[in-house]
Image 1: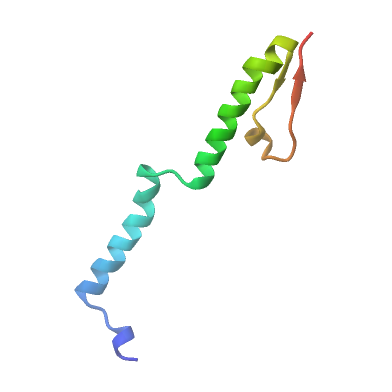
Image 2 (image 1 turned 180 degrees about the horizontal axis):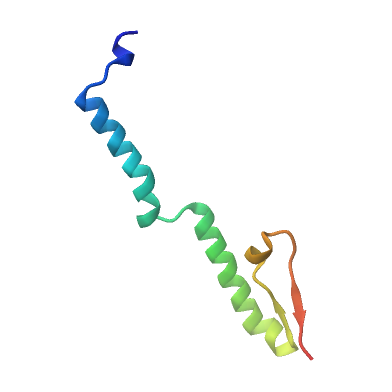
Length: 76
């Protein structure tokens, strides 16, 4: 049990590197959730251009509504 409570330079450096890795990782790599949302927004944008805009409709970004509902806009 004494071993678990020791503070050495090795343990301090390991903890510093682990902490930095947690904060630096998202700067270089996106999460699966971020990639899925980006793909969804690209799909909605493409569908708006092909289908909805020519019919005076559009689907709003569902991220703005926290995915609670899908907003379809009608233009006169």
